[in-house]
Image 1 (tube, rainbow, N blue to C red):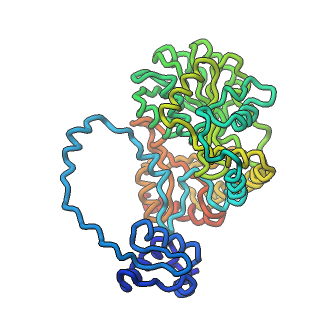
Image 2 (cartoon, rainbow, N blue to C red):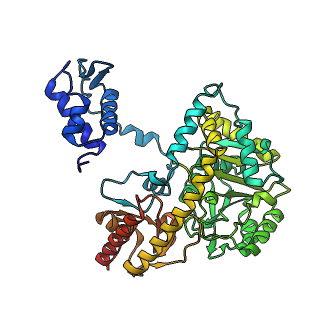
Image 3 (cartoon, rainbow, N blue to C red):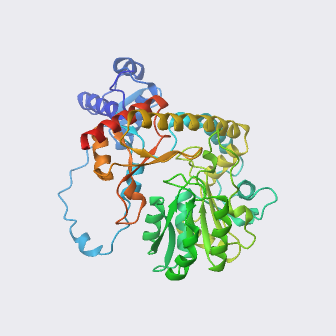
Length: 473
């Protein structure tokens, strides 16, 4: 395969072929283009799909691909859209950090910023098989219940609370991914203008969701043992907040695990405040194979319904399997359901059926075992490479779970500068300031080790990051 086999390059070449041949002209046979350009049939097929969608070519089964003979669309005159600035006077949500994490890196840039598994780590065959089985199920293309498929809700209830735990299928709401679940929970449980307690630092999606809902974030510091629970009672009292958003397991971005002694203190503070804790349990299935037994979710030992739990399938499988569970009991569940219905009606049934097929197949357990080994290898590679090849970063010891490490920069370097210089050296990392409220520290980087193609690529990325930091110093 040559260096010019990217989809964009092939689309450009195919467009040039269409221009040369003119309306009604037949493009060369696929096998000839594959050989001539040294590309895969899949890439060529996708390029044809792109141009078909644009109306440049038409595909005629059995005959070939032809240049469209339709009249090209007339260019529109330059429009004046300045009126929108006068009409859209409200402040829009800040999504810079999230868009950076969702951006597709350009060619040659090694991605150490995204939190989604590289394709080589995804259970692609198991997903394809599950989708095939789901597509053949009777009723797959009918409307799903608003709360989700009963079988999938029951699976999540057992997975989160245990077989004999406090959660039942009726306490589970199926949502389109963890971010949607988080947005629904904040909108349902907190009124605009009210305060919500958040860890500091924390996941940028939490800050963005709270801002979009018109909420006031009150930071509670995180240390090596998780959120500082001794500060919660005062934070609840002084802010009037009745919700805490917390990641007790392999916290993003620090990787901290809430210490055993703090778990009871956290729940005591929540109960005394008549409050809720939104437990974002996003890394539970990203445990490494050298980890000891994990603490159970807060939701598994919550008789009085203070915990609203979020469990997503996206992180351990594929960024496109956007299925998550949102659990609550009592009036809180009714509010969550109502908010969910207003936002999206229901989650598409084919995706729920696919998730159910995957979760209940032996291949899912096999995938998790393989992933646990791969994540441990990548963590060790990252830590070893940083120690040997990037001495200017100070790295907190990485936990045997999750997908990232939290690093401190030299005093002379700001995170935004490090990120920009890293991109110039073809490596993408996340600035630590994105995980704080405005005005927070700007001397950290978060490095993810799951989006790179291989451990060897991680080593090269660390070398590039070191070159970038040396340039700044």
